[in-house]
Image (cartoon, rainbow, N blue to C red; front, side, top):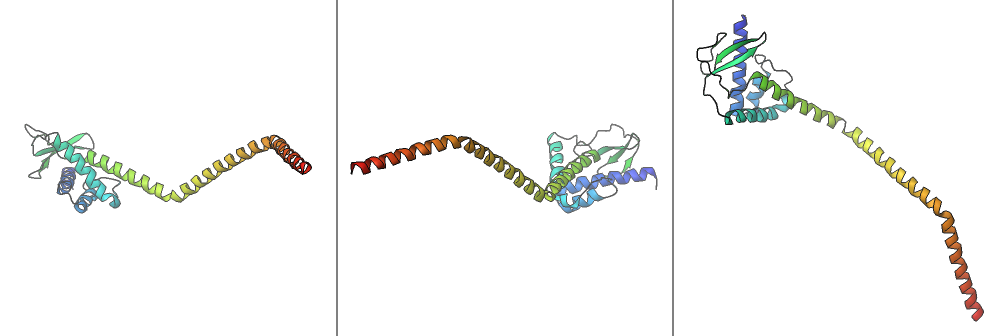
Length: 188
């Protein structure tokens, strides 16, 4: 298989992803993203709906800025070359067509990879947190227990410092009650 033919498949794969995102259905979008022709890495089937939503949002922003209306797209290829592809006829080549204007409403492979990487990384972080949830709950419980224990010990130290004053006040009160009782008895 020639190099030109391989990059034609890449261009067709990128076009397939753009078409699938445009239709708004997650299943074809996921299939197109997983295609070896596009060459994206890190695609997870669990994130299909999020890929669809995020890629559609990127496409929506590109369309909102206004497009050139061109039928041609330029894809960067490893080695510093560009492959030019006609979206309508699905033909491509290495030579820049005369009066070439880039169709700037099409998602590029780099934009697709960036979106896929971001969504997959967020999903993996979420899964990691969910896997460690029990550990986090136990850690929080221990931290709270430690704080309660420190507060209790602090309160006990405060009360122990007050014992002499408390004893003195109690003895004064008991003495007063006894004198009052004695006074009442002696008056009787």
